[in-house]
Image (cartoon, rainbow, N blue to C red; front, side, top):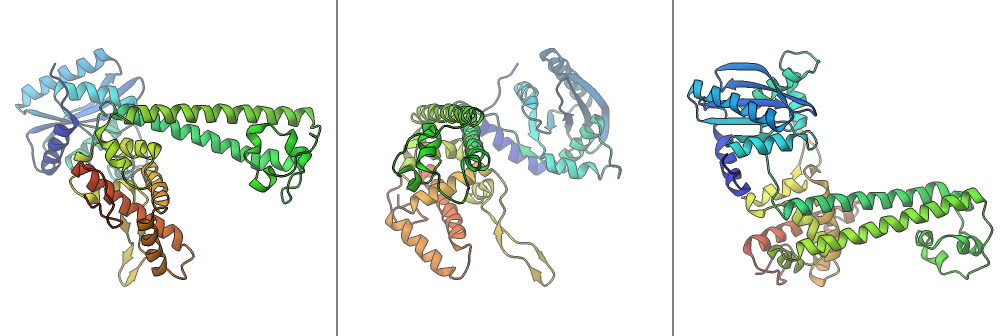
Length: 399
């Protein structure tokens, strides 16, 4: 069995493939609707005829091998040399099949879930949904060239992505703990509009005191007030959860730093103002390999920082960012822009942009978003040049 090609070679092949999917007839096109127990596929000769409208693929290694032998028989019978397979990403269920087919030499691509859902209604103008119809829908989109690149993360990129997802989940758990304290337990201790008494603050577990305003924490201590057994047990339980979640966050932060430290790009990105260890790891995990992108506009779209505007006739809407792509990358860039504004050069740039938006109630937010886009351009230039950021004007690395 041939070995799987690297992502660099595969993305070059994907660009060539997408340019000819609408016209080339010398290919086998396969659309596969992925499920847990068994997948359903349709096989057709490109822009010619359907060879098999429904093929069931057991979700096992033996089932994948038998399906590939079926594809090989169709390839020999039709005389074509290429097989292109389209999958709709379904959690992680599609990864095993995609890797097996790619290792055998097939070109594996993805179809966006939203595009597939909209196009499904155009097949026969009915609203029903079933597995054979989904496979037929994927083949149609494949013939139209409406496909996406299917990346197989290499190490340590795959490890980074997993650690970043775990860190995000842990921070969400910490946010849930804060919301439980603010909305449920804090009102039970006294009126929400006035500070807690020193006796109540002394009775609180130490992890929960960190949620209080600074002025309340610095108040004079008093004798701890006796709390009801139920409320005391609930406070203790929440404090234990907060301690455990913070321990998870510290462990994951250390693991991220350990994984990213040996990477060459880490030193280059850490030289950029605002990018600390955790944000650098998130940017590396979300961007993947910078060589996959040929233009900066591709990175900007990936982060959802590209500018869009809805227009119709004489009417034109307000320009805004698309907010598509990867939200975690956009959040990391926003936080990095806030950190970069602590340096004189970026602080001056922020002041200039704020002066342009006098009177706008959302001027600060819009300015930080614009600086985040400029910071992404700095990351693009530094990473591709392979040299650290050495200052210069904000928005363009002087390397």
